[in-house]
Image (tube, rainbow, N blue to C red; front, side, top):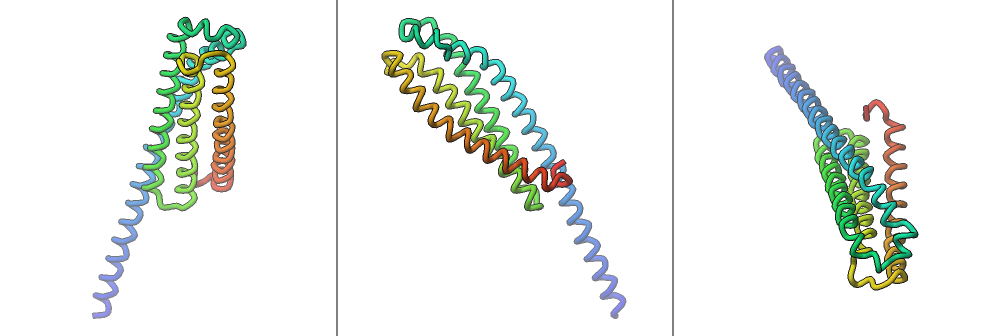
Length: 188
């Protein structure tokens, strides 16, 4: 009788361990796939930012601001295309954030979950930064902004918001870097 119970217990224990290992393997595989998808979204966002950078430089040059509002009509196409690039980059960062949120839900290791959550928040913050850049260039064609002085005032408001987002970005990056440095084997 005792041998049957011991054998039954061994079989149940084996099945529980096997199921646990299978789940762990599945969750790691699922998370790795989501992290890879996140990386594609980050690459796409960075490519869009690279495309927008020269346009941003042109739109925020002293010559452009000095000629404002007389050059508003000439700036519209460039503002629109630059704004669209930043909107698309924001969408890509949001997708990346969503992928890491999903990955954090399938993992069980606390530090991995914390790392994914931190990176999720970082990419969500980057999306807000892209929207801010869109708003920055869009101010050039905003009919409520009547002269260079009111444009500079709007840009100053947006710069204040940018500083808080930049501070949050630095904090999130430092936190994710610290977790990664402390647990490199978990975050390969």
